[in-house]
Length: 166
Image 1 (cartoon, rainbow, N blue to C red):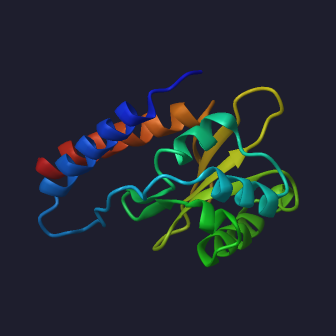
Image 2 (spheres, rainbow, N blue to C red):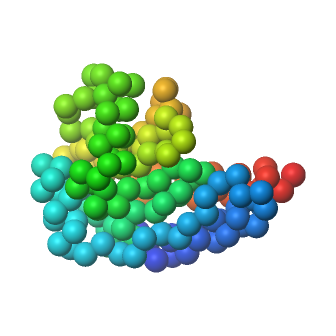
Image 3 (spheres, rainbow, N blue to C red):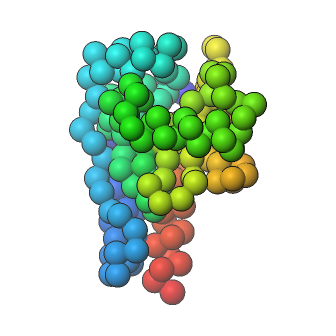
């Protein structure tokens, strides 16, 4: 899948701006994406994870090296976090507690909430798109690929903005 990440990031930025305007009490954090990751940072994260990143996810990271508060207070990790940062380490521990059968496998968190048990988890798949799970004690949603996940996050932010305006 060839995704125009610049356009997708612009869509998310527009959704986040609508949400911020609908959130005058600052219930949620509103932050821009991180600057692009270098190829070296992506290779370092892959080395630290012991596996190559999904091509679609790596392409996104080359445009935005993670996104703080991509949805409410849930962060999409940067390559620095994927390389063993504290939020990644805590998310791995939470994943092991919530989904013991996933611990030690190829499954790894790509995002987590600072204030709840929400996790975004990648299920790597050789030769095809990796699925993304949104977990919060139970499976909230499952996405067939990183672009599908990202599009859903845009939609969730737009819906949240609409709900908060009402």
